[in-house]
Length: 482
Ligand code: G3H
Image 1 (cartoon, rainbow, N blue to C red):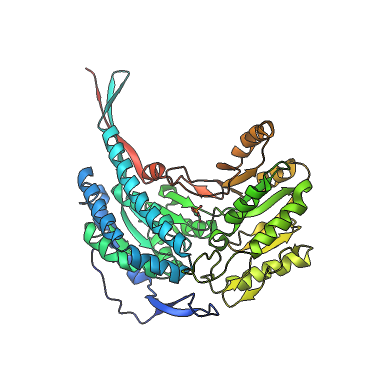
Image 2: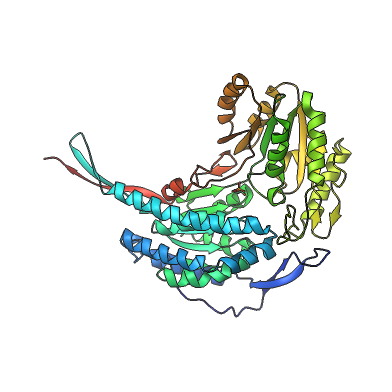
């Protein structure tokens, strides 16, 4: 979708999109293919966005707020009509279970409606005049320019649209490239984008990041890099920009969220929350629990109960009833997970659950690993998959020190009962991460809450409310009382 036109792909190269399958073996099968675009298409899309913005003088950035809202409302209505088609592709393409696929779609729609409401409120507030020291001010929020938007495969709708939608509604123009997996599901929505917004406001490209995003950044014409993914890609793209000091970054990055289980924790609740926290969508969430610190006194009991629950989970196709574990969309993932397991085993860890680490073509059974130490790759690497590293501790300072040394600082889950122990601990943890989940697993939602992180985990905040601010700048008219 470039400059309001859905173009036919004439290039020869395509990237084959393989997917999970409905066969017994859960082998990858071909679902479709997407154009493997390059610099030429990237420049066309960028030029369309630059021209539509036209240094803030274009139709979209100068359009009345009420009219921009109408365009967004038209878009979301058309999107809602595509629910079944998109959900089906979510299941097929990235292997997300049926309930989670519906949840992702509905949550995204709700995010858009909430954004519209928040934008109306923002506009109402900006209509008011302020007066300080004899100076009246009418403060508004204006767009920033051209936004390059890159989304992740694990939430191809929700995470991606949490960038794209606020960027668009604030009056910016955009070039959007979906991730390598979870890309076909964008195609049913292209007509909705095309018919709802003026030409050049939303331009959609397919291909590899290196082939399309890097040349776009090199031009220096991008004002905002909006990306949910890993810090390595974000840094590499940022480095391409010739005037990176002019570039605004809106980034949601990797994390290694820990669970800390205190000796008085309610074990039934803790086991269930840790199960959801570590293995929802096979651990392919930046908010997933990626290390579990359990107090020595309850270590044995926790490992036993947790391992049994992991082995009792149901594996199958995303549309199967009651399924919790599904095939992994990245073809290289099971082999990578196995590498991490082998490395940990050589260094002294043991797989605690009977089925742990059993591989098949595109799945590997979740492995509960104990004891995990800092020299193991699984301790350092985000892994984004079904390994649950467990570390025991005697003194609470041990997990706290590890968190302080970590490169990440998104969230933590804290399990325990005694208020006098929990209360000061929460204060300490809140200075290490941005969200402390008390007796519950880590998660992004509800999307009206701030979603952010410290250190390498984020740059900017992505709640409905904050995202509108991340994609805009305050401008004002002032006059004196004379
Ligand atoms: O990958 C990171 C997502 O923001 C996780 O969102 O906690 O709702 O699964 P979630």
